[in-house]
Image 1 (tube, one colour):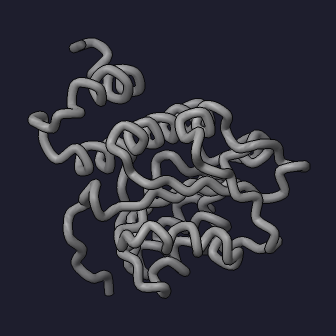
Image 2 (cartoon, rainbow, N blue to C red):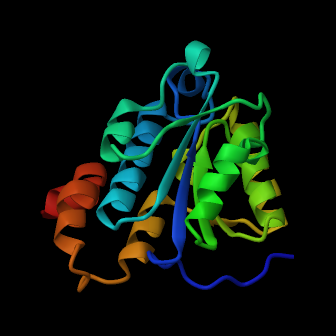
Length: 200
């Protein structure tokens, strides 16, 4: 049974993005790769604007390619952690778990490739580690639609709160009176949402 979490708070959140690499994205068959790519850019940009600590990981970078460069450029002071432990749970690598814990934040917002493997396994571990875990499902993808959907159901059963990138950024912003609202409209909402692009 899932427990009740407090609303997302920009001052309580840490963002973990797992394995957004070219070959991992190429293997996605559960949804539109361009939408996934653009969605994770929107999520990351929202985190950058709102000063959310962000942790980036890769697996087998020599083989699977580098982390999405547009996101790496958003966080010039953040080292991309190429995981040394060749498993599916990113937290098996002490550097990743240490980087998240070092922020001192309890609300863990994460997404990754693939949903059925590294994303789900890390989210489940996050629950066991005592974080309030929020999974951003619309910027993830997996090897098939059923794999993606089943992984989401498994995470929800374990207590992970399902979200979309727009829900997360909006909840972090809280309301349109936020001093960063104008920048979010310009660099996130109007750039990555068709509705907002028509209005602004």
